[in-house]
Image 1 (cartoon, rainbow, N blue to C red):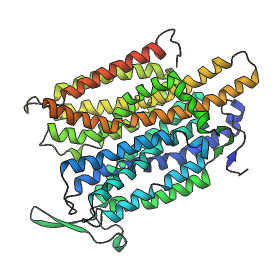
Image 2 (cartoon, rainbow, N blue to C red):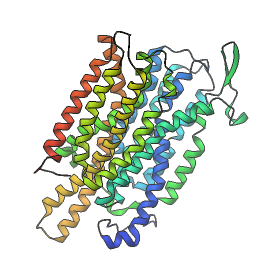
Image 3 (tube, rainbow, N blue to C red):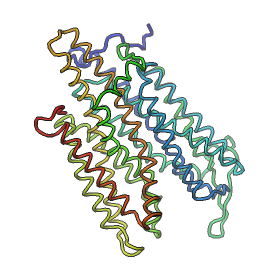
Image 4 (cartoon, rainbow, N blue to C red):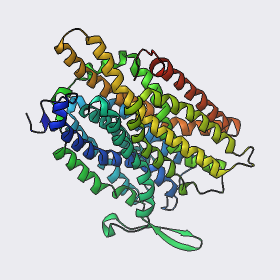
Length: 461
């Protein structure tokens, strides 16, 4: 067996954890984090590129540009379903390296395609779908990291992995406008495109939006291959993991994660468009990065607080506060094209993003605790061997649920922006969409209280 494969892994054993487990787990975590950040950056590339296509000579309709920004969310969410189950099949080290290397396909593809404004629209659509590879990586990454840490530290560990990984959304919004404005690769990236602004001819290297990530992807891939580990006990077939589809708590946690991560990625994708429609005089790209940045930074806080007081309690109050924040958004929106307060609107959305980050951390802390408790209860009184097997089974099930719920939640990246557009089309405003969000968050509160956070709940966590 390869030296990269760990034969004995007992994170719940205090002696093992202190002697060798903690060091190994932290090394795998700190290699995983930048790889996941790159995945998020590639996933969200089109949200930045699309607003610059006209400057590079591409002539597309608004509807065509909408699909270019929407397709990565759809393909990424769908890939997450499959990626949820791949770590126990391939091994965490091997799959992290493979999935990170796969980001080279859309990065290089976009680099070459965006050099030429005659590139046809179907090619651009295929590249948008391929950016979903970055979205898929989240589920396998979270599944992998969950194996390495004991129950008491899972919240903080998964919160750091996901929270700093989520920063990739803000990173891409910072980096791309900078690198497309200069020939950072010289002749290697090709000639710039030119456009005229205020009577002055300017150059843009839109291809750099893809090329800039290539060296970082290569380094992250090599770090994963040579620096991470596979856990022998974490091996499982798809059939072994498919048991989660029979678990009630899998579906309940998927519902809650749509409320937290679905809101984070959906608002990330839709806030700029919403701002432009409601406050035409505001440049949305000047503020779009703030919400995702805050949401990413608060995710580890959600995991850390949940480790201290319980994930269910945090999740319940997050949804209560999200309802109040959406009500706040409604108060600052213009009515019939008049009034409104952009900075009040922005403040409410930043609060919403902060709450989604905390909720992302708390729900992902709930999942491993729920499945470990459930399996331990089932094995109680059946001997040490049965209890040890219960711990192993719980880790595999929790990892699969972390990935699968991440997949379902990611569909928010498509449906939330679409709901804004549909609401505007049918009613002339976005109030109807926001009222639907309030109703959904209320359902999440009820589920959290009924099953997890109330006194004498069936599965307190």
